[in-house]
Amino acid sequence: MNNTKSTIQGFEVEGVHITKVIDTLGSFSPKVLYVDKDRSSFDPHIDWLQPHFVDEAKGMLLSIHSFVIQTRHHKILVDTCVGNHKTGSGFPQWNNRKGNYLEELVAANCRPEDIDYVFCTHMHIDHTGWNTRLQDGRWVPTFPNAKYLFNQKEWDCWKNSDDAADKAVMAQNILPIIESGQVQWVDNAWSIDDQVSLLPTPGHTPGHCSVDIHDGSSRAIITGDMMIHPVQIAEPEWNQSADQDRALAVATRSAFIDEHCDRDVMILGTHFNTPTGVYITEHNGQRRIRF
Ligand SMILES: [Zn+2]
Image 1: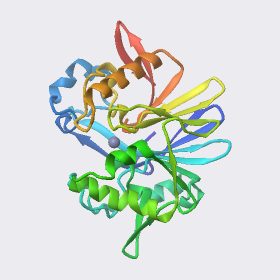
Image 2 (image 1 turned 90 degrees about the horizontal axis):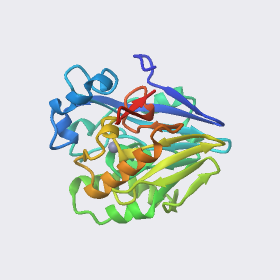
Image 3 (image 1 turned 90 degrees about the vertical axis):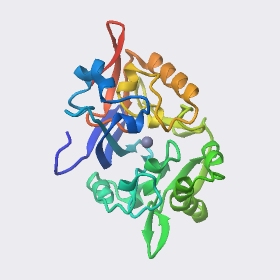
Image 4 (image 1 turned 45 degrees about the vertical axis):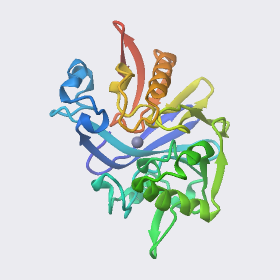
């Protein structure tokens, strides 16, 4: 579905249309994401991870994208990627970017002014970047008519951080939204409408929520960073370096995989490369995916 012309990909849940819009896509050394792993760690899984999720050099293919959910009632943007012109990141490639995300969004039939709600699964840099854009030297909300649904528990975790990179994210991506008056504070039990609800999946961060999309018997779940790569479906105990509470992250991930294995629930991976929407299956006692 991906090609050089456009990176837009669509998914259907009965009554709901979901569109993936990519900000950036890259190959990463496993060590960057899983501190105690290396390229050979993928060997037991290489047969089912290549070519979509691991490249020929055994680099992890990771996509940073948004999902636009069009329900009967609302247009909802989930996760806002890295953004443009940001500074202060510990990842040099994410500083002073000049990507064409907004053009891609419009090509996906979604103008910034059309968005009713923005929800960030958590407040890391690659999930909050396009909350704001630089205009005349100031950070302003990218989505002028949207309510930004900020999870109070997540904000409580970050608002007093002393880390310079965290402070940069808050100053550029979060505080300008709070100051604009466009925030609606929510908790883990929030439903955006009758087709979209938050699903608490803590561990990666304390207030981390996945997004549950449902209509009739049809269902899809956006992972956020509860898992960042399909390998974690087979290896749920693989912690990401950014998992704040490692034991809770493993428990959350394991329970999620158990619950949704061999069920008719599409798992939309927030960093899964195309095809991105997968189903969890069990095969000879091993957890795998189909798509
Ligand atoms: Zn992420």
